[in-house]
Each structure stands twice: as C-alpha cells, then as structure tokens.
Amino acid sequence: MTPEAALLAGLLAGLFGSTHCLGMCGGIAGMLHAQLPGDRPGLAAGFHLGRIASYLAIALVATGIGMLPATLLPETAPLIMRVLLGALLVAMAAYIALPGRFRDRAGELAAPFTRRLMPLLARFLPVRSLDNALGLGLLWGLLPCGLLYSVVAAAVFLADPLATTAMVLAFGIGTVPLLLGTGLAVLKFRSAVNRRGLRYTAAFLVAFSGLLVALGPWLAHSIDHPWMQFVVDCVTPRR
Image: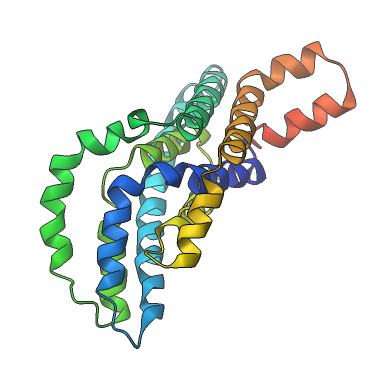
C-alpha cells in the first residue's frame, strides 16, 4: 500500500470512525478541555499532539514487527500480509459503516484498564503549561481503542515506516475535529460527519481500497487494461 493510499485510508478511518469513539473518548476530551485555563485555550493542541505521538510510536513498533516476516520469508510473506491488510481494511470499513453498540465493544471490554489509567491522568491536572498538556495527550494515546488497534494491526501488515507514518498521522488528524470538546461549531460538525450517506461513502472507499490491496495483483493479471494497472499501482506496496 503506497503512502498516499495509506494516508487516505487513515484520514477516512479517523474522521468517520471517531464518531463511534465518542462514548469513551468524548468524556475524556470534555474533561481535559474543561481543565484548560480560560486565557490559554491553545493548550488543547498539546492534548492532540501528545495523543498522536503515542499512536505513532506504537504503530512504528508494530511496523518493525511486521518487517520481520518479510525479511525471513521473502517469497510468501508479502502476499499473505497483503491479503491480511486488505481484509483488515474491509473490517475497518464495516466499523465505520455499522451503527449501534457493536462499534463500542472494544471500549467496553477495555473499561477496567481505562479506569486504572484515569488517576494517572488526574496527576497532570489542572493544565498549567504545554508540558502538562503533552503529558496528558501521551497518556490519552495509551487508552484502549478498537479503531486504534485496527490501525496498529494495519501497521504490522504494511511493514513500511513511511506508509505507517502517513496512515497514523492522517488517522490522528482525522480524529481531532470530533474530539475538540464542546462548542456549537463542534456539535454541528459532528452531526454533519455522522450523516449516513457520508459515512457509507467513506466506508465504501476504505473497503474498495482493501479489496484492491488484497486482490490487486490478480486483477491486474486478469484485466489487461492501463486504467486497472494504474489503480493497482496506487495501492501496491513499493518494495
């Protein structure tokens, strides 16, 4: 999967998938933003910078793990990992599209760990400096999240630091608008992004990318057309 395709998949997953994460992260975001000094609202950026930094560190470790099979088993590993990555992208598309409690199960299962981490978050409150905000963001990024786990798993199958960086940064940026706390503008944006048509369109694009990743070489071989080869090249890993 090319960095460009990974960036698009990460952005769509973050922007539209984060509508399902508000049950857990929405409360945390509201609590953290409420602790900001009235004269320094810009410190909120530290929350999200720290959170995305945690995501990126975890994903790059996962990428290193994913690079090992490609080194030890160069003949078979890339094909297997490509199919697994494609299947994972399709699963992420289902996560984006499906409503209801299904989407929150990972957060519910991880609730005990989240409760244990909350007192540690409280040690950095109130937020008085950028260091406090970054520390809170780094800890926030360690909280269990089903969608984040999907992105980390994708990093293993990508086995490409550049593509992983593009996907994780885009994913993190995509989650920011819906986790900015409160405010009329944020609420209106949440309502707009959660529209069924937009959500289904994003899910279709992610699923289509997953199918191309998994079946791309076979499609390029079966459909001898320059357009199909171009599409396959857009999602085929550059190794």
